[in-house]
Image (tube, rainbow, N blue to C red; front, side):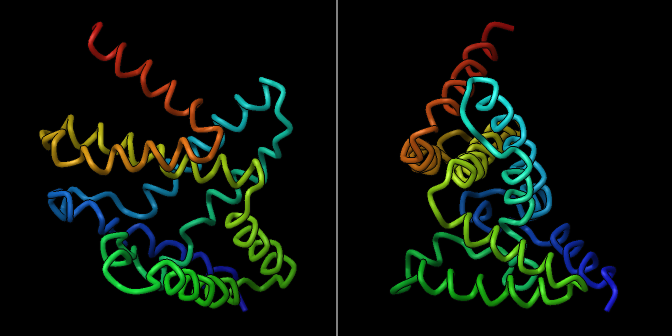
Length: 196
């Protein structure tokens, strides 16, 4: 089995839209892809993990980056399952988790090296836990949503479209107990934006 098959699967994320944005009025043509979101989440993860490490926290930066790169891999098969959909069906989160686990295994099965399959599967499991690394990735994942809202606002979308989402994401980030760091940097940006 060639690793190219696995890579071609991953490349499909470039064409999978983040469907939740459509609910907030973003035109489908302007909706970011899962690949774009994954890249930015990984980028924020790297920066914030390095910053936490400089502040003395024991963080495995390489692990956080790998976890961020893998966190939405299942969407190659499942596409982006909107939170709006999950909120409307009974046991939506449990159902999504079950589907995602099966999709992850199916995609990783195309990796020709069994040790990598096992290592990456372990990353998925740890992402669901409460390690410092998983908290950083989850916060970076949510932080990217806030950055994307700012980007959509700069393209003319009304801030009112996203107010409820913004508040929910801030709560998610704060619940991770490291979120203050992310939100502090966002507030500094908001202040600087009006000083130019």
